[in-house]
Structure formats: C-alpha cells, structure tokens
Image 1 (cartoon, helix red, strand yellow):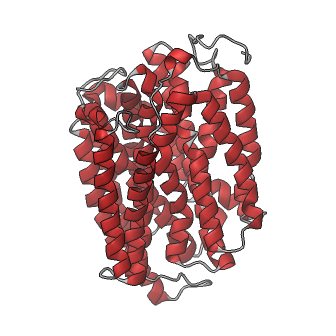
Image 2: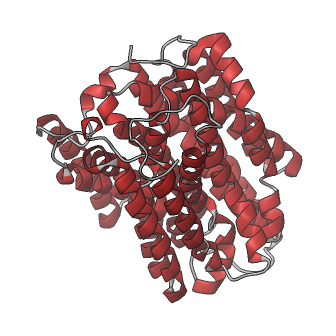
Image 3: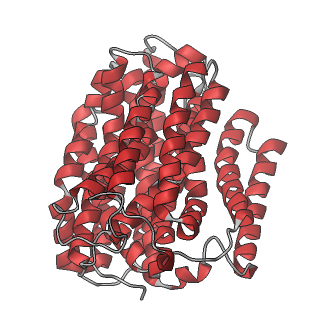
Length: 483
C-alpha cells in the first residue's frame, strides 16, 4: 500500500491491512508505554533529582493529566483538520520533545516535560483508534482489529516497568525517554506510507472549542492538585480550598459552556445514551484500578522489598501474560452473558483484586500476583467491550471523538488513581521516601498505608465500574449502539 492509494479503500482481512495496522499499533504503543515507562525509575529519579513522594506522583501524573485533559480537543481537531494529519504532527512533536530530557536538571523541569509529552500524545491516541476502524467495513474485522490495538496498547502500558527496569540496568534513566524518538520516527514513516489520506466528506466543518479545552484541563488539573495540596499544605489550608473551589467552578462552567456553544468540544447529548455513558464510567473505574496498582506496587517492590528495577519490572509479568492471554476469555464473557453482565463480572473482579491486594501486600508476592491476574482479567473485559461500543455509538464523522471519550476516561482515571495512591501514601506513611534500606518500622508503616489505600480503592473502583456496567445493553454482538 502506498501514500497515493485511494483514501476510500478498505480491507477484507487483518493480513491484507498489516502495514497500516502495524503502523497504527506502533503509534499507540509508544504513547501508552510512556504512561508507565518512567514508573520503574521513580526511586532512581527521586534520588537523582531530590524528589519527594508528591513530586514523583506528578512525574507520572503530569503526563496523564495533559494527555487526558486534551484528548477531546485533539479528537475535535482530528475530526476537522484530518485524522492522519493530526496523528503525524503528534508523532513528530512527541519524538522531538523526548530528546529534550537530556537538558533536565530538576524535578520541576521533568514534570513540565512530561506534561508537554502528554499534550503531544493526546494528538495521537484517539486518532489511532478511529483510523483502525476506518480500515475495515466488516464489524467482526473491526472488533478483531480493535482487540489487536488494545492488546498492543495495554501491553505497552504494562511492559513499561519491565522495559524500563531492564534499561536501567545498563543506561541512565534519561534514555527511557530518548528511546521514544526512534520509535516515533518509525511509526511516522509507517503511518505516512500505509494509512490513506482523509476524505473531505468524513470530516466536520464545526469550529474548534478552545474555551471548552481550557476548562476541561483546568477541571481535571485542579481536582488532582487538590489532593497534593491537602497533603503539603493541609486540608483546611487556603491553597487546598482554593483548588477544590476552582475545580468545581471550572467543571460547572465547562458544562454550561458545552450546552450553550453551537460547536461544543464534547456533545453532552451523547451521554443520554446508556452505551456511551456506561462505557465512559466503566472505563474510568478500570483505569483508576490500573494506575493505582502500577504506581503503588512499583514503590512496594523497590522500597519495601528492596528489589532492583529489573526484578521489580519482572514482578509485573502476571499482568503482562494475563493481558495477552485474557482476550478469548473476555470475548467469551461478552458473547455468553452480554455486555452488561460481562462488565458486572469484570467490576467484581476489579474490586475483589484490590481487596486481595489490601491483604496481600503484607503476606508476600504470591497473593499479590494472584490479585494482579484477577485485576487484569477484569480490565481486559471492560476495556475491550467499552472501546468498541463507544466508537460504534457515535456518528461516522465523529469517530475521533468517540475514541477520545474512551481514552479520556482512561487517562482521567489514571490521573485520579495515581493521585489517590500518591496522596494516601504521603498522608499515611511519609512525604519524603528515604534512600537506602528502610527500617522495619517504616516498612510496617508502609504496609499499613497500602492496606488502607487498596481497601478504599476496592470500594471506589467497584462502585464506579459496576455503576457504568449497569447502563450498558445486553447485546452479545460487537455492533452496539446507544440504548
């Protein structure tokens, strides 16, 4: 397939579409792996840059924050300017920005760089998913292609710590970002040569809603910062209260603006359908679970257990293996019980796995690994069902918005999950994670803080994921629309 091929061409098999599919999967992989690639290096970064618990939280949270906050804006831009065009720009900026890590000398600079990388990644995520749908007319092929995409993306998400830990054994932590540049370049070439150009009739002429973009980022950012401010300045401090009020005001203003503007960034009427509303809510719950566990266990393995980055990365293998192997089980659940019941089963697995972690962190690695497996099966089931349902539930000329809604829910959940764990550990244990071997009293305090944290998350995630699942339909097909 060449760049001059007709933009209307679709494919009759995954094998025939391997060039564009591989390119889009690689683009999705690099943006997802960057979510967690640095997580394994947090202790190393903390020692190198003198960062405390809340600063480390923002090294990972800043990426998720701008990524999640701008996904809808990027989806809107792609639906107007061209999906392939926006994706190519995002890949170029992402690769070039990653190289600037060599100039970072302090935690503030690294947090700023991570935030900027999140902006570039936001221009990639919803477009990769929507372009995969455009490659095929057949609903079954779309489901299979989306399954491949989700598997690759989530593999990148969970492989991040393992790849990062292996790299840290031989290179400085800065190389974990520098490697993004050649990967982004390969993806850029593959998309440019293998993905057909946009058709004018597939785009919309609506104006960009920049005000809505600013308000959405402000809402998410202030809400997450409120948790950090509560630990650093006190829950009754002026800074914390101002952050909470700012988040509420921004959220209310965002909703009012989106309802009144003639060309909203997010058409709130989409949420009147049970499929869209339920899928977004359920995705939010899964991502809170995933991010909280990834962030919390990295600290657990390296600080409390004293494991090396490589060993800590290998400890995530149950997630990786289950993510790759759980696809048939997830599809079987959906086909046998329907989307609603399958997602309710998955919500129970998520809540149960977090409750298992609350007990398991004080009883060795085996119960932690079992909880990882149960959590990943729940994640895989919800994510597969909801991703397909969301994109299928929106109009054909707004598929980037459908994909952006899916990814926004995931990234907002990641920001919230990371912020919750970082805040609870800072509040219950310590705000400054000491270098070197921990004392027995600090380890005991850390385990106690984890037990409370995962118990709280089990309730929160269970309620959110189950609440979203209840509004889905009982469809057993892959072609779902709003109820």
